Image (cartoon, rainbow, N blue to C red; front, side, top):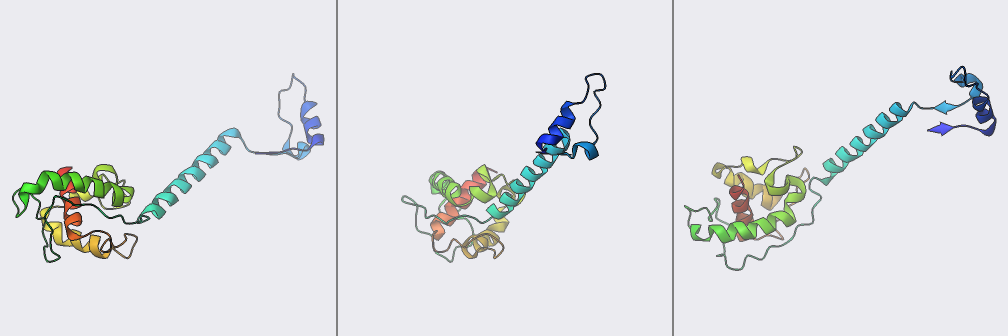
Length: 171
């Protein structure tokens, strides 16, 4: 914030107590930023870095597998959540939501937020409905090309639907 040489300090120190007037910049040859300007500039820089970090963070995830022991194997042909309470495997709803929470934490929370509450840069998964199941499975399996990675190599369909069950449980 300051660029003051020894001679410039002497000019500033010669200022009398009675005037309390600042030494003109031309005579002190001092490059000085008012403290408020410096604070504002610092805050703007910090906010810019934070926003850039959030934008870069979208999709910056290394996909992780999920152990789905205890859940039935779900085929790739299934296009709606089989673990809903009124669906084919509804009796596994609680276990699917519990396992899905672990899968969500390791694969989704970094971008989509804790408990699926997005910070605004990524879709808010709590807004998905059962009508969005095909959209959901397509995005998770194939990725988006715009930041979200494909999870087809790391998550089988049982894991993908367990994560969807968890997301539905926090809506």
